[in-house]
Length: 525
Image (cartoon, rainbow, N blue to C red; front, side):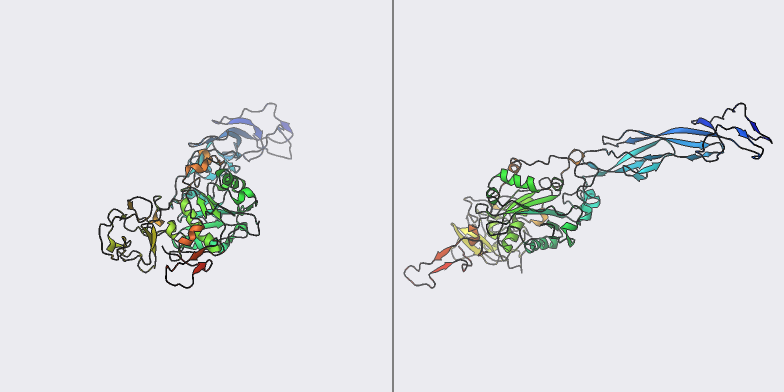
């Protein structure tokens, strides 16, 4: 509209032109899409010419599609403006997304994608402009994808773990050295507070020794022994990780000194093991007394209980018990113990053996048929362990016998002075039966997903409460006792009871007549 000279005003306001989908909101003199409307339709001579433009608006909606999930937030609206000065120019509404996040079983919420699954992504609480009715689609990370088969979903290792499905990262594995392409094992170690003149926290050196063994096999073992301890995988102190260390000491008490039942063990776990860590970490607790046992461990579980011993013994015992968590039994794939063809720290005969050291079985030796043994074959006829210097043991008529070097070595199973017999029938592992003793290669068969490690329920939530019945799901192995160390070829003088070996020459003479540990080094039967 244009007016001439003088002062004049409209006696009536013209009807605005209609545009499909738009609602007229009045006239204005501004040229922006969201220009203000005016009620002053007069013009002065000084103004000369005044232009009035039709102003329009429409309401746009933003909705959410949970894309297979539930709990999407409600819809939101915003007002869009335009101006007849340039009807194609709009002022779009800015929408702040709801902070509500949907959930979906076996998936972790990633973001909202605009208009399609492949659209631009926005996090809850973010702001975005919309120029039309818009649908935001939930984008999900699939928790079933585990490239390295370590039990930890790839998305946890890349973006951090949202344990309870609330969209908030609970354990930032991505900042704790996790690698989706290399197996990671996380272990939290708690310990009984000092008491009785002793400390029960294992040394870093004892745990690092085990870390080095796993590292050599391409497995990243992260051990949290407290805020000042180091994650050997990254070289970072645990206190410097987001969230810090979870490891701590627990009370020195009569019950905790000897947690001889599941309820006490359960209490130690529930009182010290942070719930958010229970989908990721294994848990070990060092105590003062296990009734003569060196340790207990859940088979294909995530918990171990260990007697605090010497530094070296702690290394052996920890590796043995974590082996149970990783699915290994005393015979590898079975519970048949003392098999001479199973060269592993899991085998009681080799649990504390200084020739084998810290190692699981690296080769599956041939099976041994106790009903028909061939002596020239021994236990390693093809020399799989040539150059390793490994020894083994068997039992002949109740007497333990050493095989000092196993590779390509014939064995006199029946003790007749020859090593050439065939068809020998002998119970060589002293279990009272005749069976086929199977070899086993441990390192290829480790099961990383044990207990609750990596488990995800609805929305990533599962019951975090342990009870005494929890442990009944797993084999409670009869672990090697301190007394048995004397018979296993590895000794820790500060840990073993006082033993005296008296020698009877039976009519002859012998010097010395007795040995008392710690001078006692090895007995072979």
